[in-house]
Length: 369
Ligand code: FNR
Image 1 (cartoon, rainbow, N blue to C red):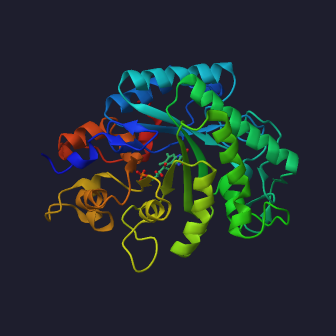
Image 2: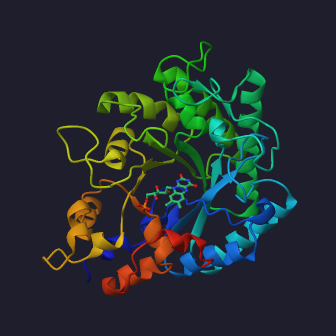
């Protein structure tokens, strides 16, 4: 038995059964010309499934709303061609023994007019702000809110129909849903603004609409984060009690699995405990959770025997990860950049081939593999 075996045994998360605990983190690549995932995108995901990943969470793919897209050449999740492209991705991943969820995305006020599709449509957000204090976009009306909720529900239904194994709703990183969660960008005075419970109303309505669209047995993952791309030090919840009050209604609305986005998985979330955000989330909700953040970046996986270079000091060894998995702190481990650098990262780690893992470099994003 190798020390990493615990990562590579099948895992049963209730509605979602996976061959192992490794998930691919969602990573935008802007390689879908015309917003359609093409055969290179199919090959990219096929390679990660062949490389042993249990659950692939796709790059963010935007729902059918004119302000949903924020970057060029991101794949859409609506329209005949884009959905046909996604169906090919699904089939390729399934043929390689993997499972896959699309990450459903609306960028909110991060959008600038001109990004296609959407043309001149300005960024939409709760109060027209992408960052605190600066109105750059459109403050959403009730009609806008209803349209976006309907767009998420339609995407959820399409995901199930095409054969995806789950959906992930992108509620993290300062994009639209998180712009509602965050008091820095949500200054509404109607029912969608106020305390965190009120600021969660938009997310709750999206989750309930998605649940109604897919039925009771289809897994819904929610990705959320304390940090925002606009402010890495931002926090939605300062205490476990506040986190419990935030998460419980989301779970009741229909979230099956929480994907807790942190930048370094080994960092404790609150003082007085080693638990990270995924650890607290699992403990407080009883729902499965996914951890993420600098797993498998090359330095983490160097042996902890003094031969590691200086970078190991600011990362963490695989033993730290394995100990947390053994303690059932979380259920799945999402890997991002290491899977860009190493499509077969999971198989290599399962085989103990740490020496042949490549370090992540930014340029790798531009290699179509
Ligand atoms: C990301 N990340 C990200 N997150 C998300 O929820 N949706 C997305 O579309 C993207 N896009 C994206 C692109 C690129 C190039 C990177 C590097 C990251 C964040 C990602 O899912 C993950 O949380 C972080 O990369 C941290 O994990 P690693 O890379 O440290 O394993």
